[in-house]
Image 1 (cartoon, helix red, strand yellow):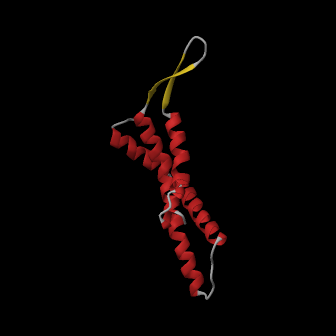
Image 2 (spheres, rainbow, N blue to C red):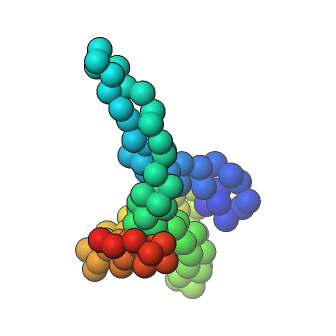
Image 3 (cartoon, rainbow, N blue to C red):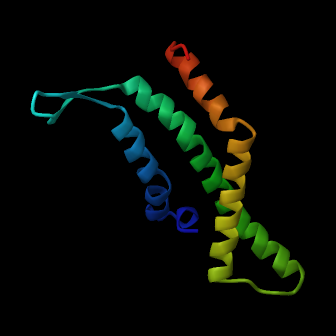
Length: 124
């Protein structure tokens, strides 16, 4: 709901944790003789592929959440009821999670990853 009203917080909550995990997994480390890690490099292609795989579901889930709220309001208004507050948050959350589950179960994340690999000229 915050995203649809122009607030930045929802976008950060939706995308930032996954972006941080994708970035962390794209860092290559070397170990010295004492077992200390030193950053060797950042694999940009690995980051882009991981982001395509992981953020595609997040983007679709966010879109479903944003779309579900006005649809729920319209449906309940058509029935002569009013829905506000927490129920709308739960409706948006449920719609977003459902779309992400369907996306991943139907191979959408795999498709997004393969498209990113192809665009970057990478093999599997």
